Length: 214
Image (cartoon, rainbow, N blue to C red; front, side, top):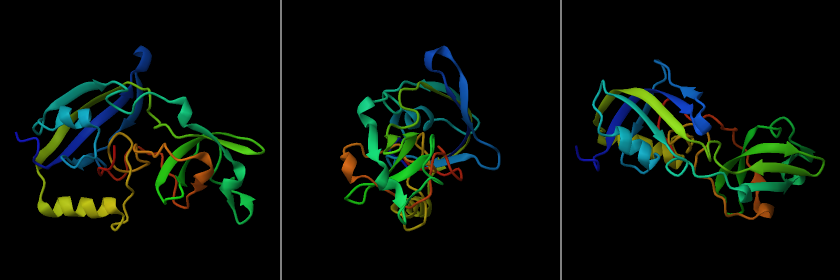
């Protein structure tokens, strides 16, 4: 099979966190909302795509990704204490959306959007973790390929349009799939340049069964 060919793949799977020998279910697809994506667009975790792209319909898979193959190690310098003023809306702190464990949209001075998880809210600061939610975790994917065929030109065009924002899609995707916040956070902005975004919070790793980002 030519791995450079863009493939339309539909898969059912269960995702486990197997860090430290434990096996905790993180996510499971359902029959009415399977995971579908198009390969060859640089949107998925490279090792995830490599493991399943050559599998035919009906094939089962069971493989693990190390943190290096998935979302990297958890970095302490990506945990920031931001001024609470940043999260004010109409002069008041946005407590409806900014609370412990909430995943919220942020934006830097250049207009780049990214997501962070609220770790703590104090009188003056909001502690935000910009690491991917699965950073530092060893992941186990178990599932089956339902469909694997060459993607049509129209399907590739539709996905490209959605990812550009013109189609209203969220350029994101947890484990390398669409929906929820993207794994590609911008980590090089200075704290003072962050500001509260006005989009919906993400947090889901997959949304609507479509593919998105790494």
